[in-house]
Length: 98
Image 1 (cartoon, rainbow, N blue to C red):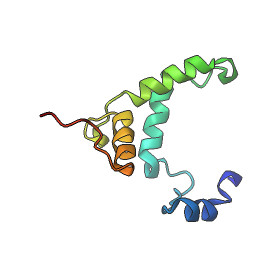
Image 2: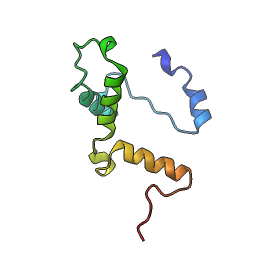
Image 3: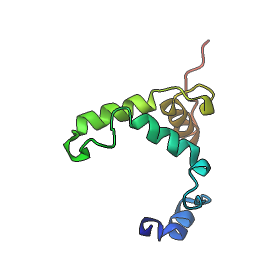
């Protein structure tokens, strides 16, 4: 779609590689499909998304980010994100026990 028209600029700005799935190939984006399936527990297709409050969306995001994932070594997405951010800042993610 047109939402990705500026991908070369984005790739150059943040210094990452970009990869796009082939159309109609959901097996190429397993994490996205898995997360969509999880979100459907609280947001079924028949539900009017405009009626969902910001508070409810935040609660759904918190649940998704607090669920351990096998692909993350049974860590939660929130834990992995925190670890990566702390690494970028040159700090250890969790204090060392003495």
